[in-house]
Length: 90
Image (cartoon, rainbow, N blue to C red; front, side, top):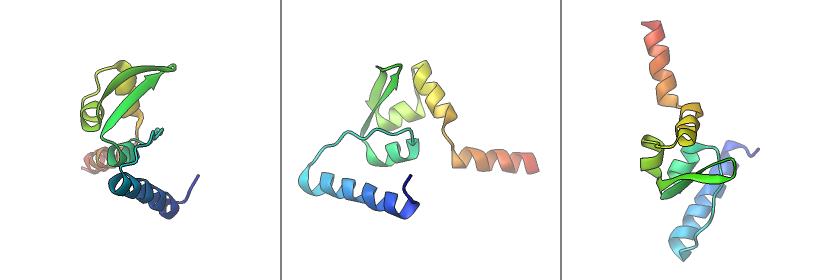
């Protein structure tokens, strides 16, 4: 695993290459925060098959397939964690 600063530099490099040179790339990740920041479109795979495809925000905000719903539900969500913690503390 890469430390956070190195990871950020690499992601910035990908974004810069895309913007300046029009280079497209296939980025495979389970990190939905990175997927949201780095992509216009996502594909969700389950058991080696594509089960959902669409604009990143559409798929991650309103997943249709069971696999995409499970992926989004399993992903750490800072906003959700803070809200849950505040609710627990009253």
